[in-house]
Length: 162
Length: 298
Image 1: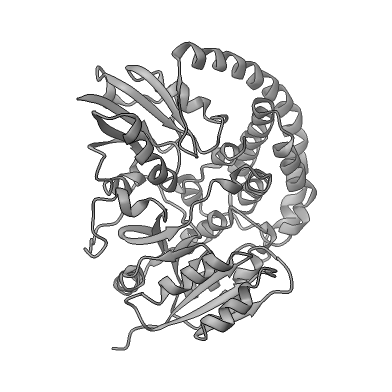
Image 2: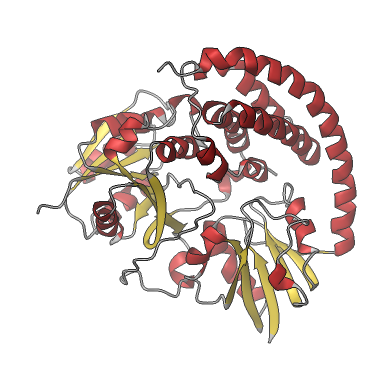
């Protein structure tokens, strides 16, 4: 029996839809799920999910926030759920998936299309995203200065009168 | 003692067949002391006529045009129940859900919202391993952080909801539940989910690529921050959100997030008299995943 891990980075309604396709595409795999604490009880309802791991942080998935339970634990496949078609907006989760020992990594999108992504591809995307982050950081410094001044003026105007 | 009245408020907009099915399913509920209020948001596909012809027990409120979530508030104001069940036009509660919800509310006077476990109508029954007939008294508890709720299936204590001001009408669409959640927690009430209280939703990927979700989610995320966070946290989260708007604009090669940000600032006047910072501990503990705004598009 091979080991498969689903990272629940999309809502349960999407997982309800994706799970049948994942089972079909990965026969002979024992399925585990990684979810935040509030997702544990809803996740227990799946008859085909063998084990649930809790992501022990409040924040979203991030490469710096590793899961201690996965130390030395290998998976044959790791699947990241993405709530759009392309997977854009999920680079943090893809990078997090690199902290898990896995032979193969996949994206499963909102219409249950499953495609493999390589570690090199994730890293290349990350390099591009670092460039975007640099640009966004510069733009934010300028915009945030104006925004702060604007909001400090507006606070009183939008404050609720007691 | 007589069972308390529950008001079911459903918002409808051009989904005649889905509304027909949802209202039919509501008839199967094991809880009988209900009033059903359907608020039609200016449908042009015959939804209100269908309701009048087939569901005489339903009280129909017609809006002259699509006024967004403000139409929900029109329904909430008419509700006479001690508790209100909020539904979309393509969602409905599992038949035991309302009965179990009432029991939980009656047992815990500080329970403000019962967040239904909203599942995918098309697939959930095939993949679940539990029988919804079975009562399960446990909550989806987590003690480190607080949660919001999903407006496609939730029960609300009516007087608490009224005190919270219902939904923020200026939002028009999306993130309204999160804004309401801040005020409910801040009023000293809790929002809890119970695994045996299930709602079904016709989860559809079809509309997810539309500009509406990224635009309104993002614009309203700014407004949620400005309305509810204490000043220092609000400025910090605003800067984070500005960064994300720029970053995801580059990443997804779209202007939609910058347009949403510009709209948030330009229309800040709509928040006049509505900023009331919550207790800093609530602001810290309520899980407000603003990143999610950037994952619907493309």
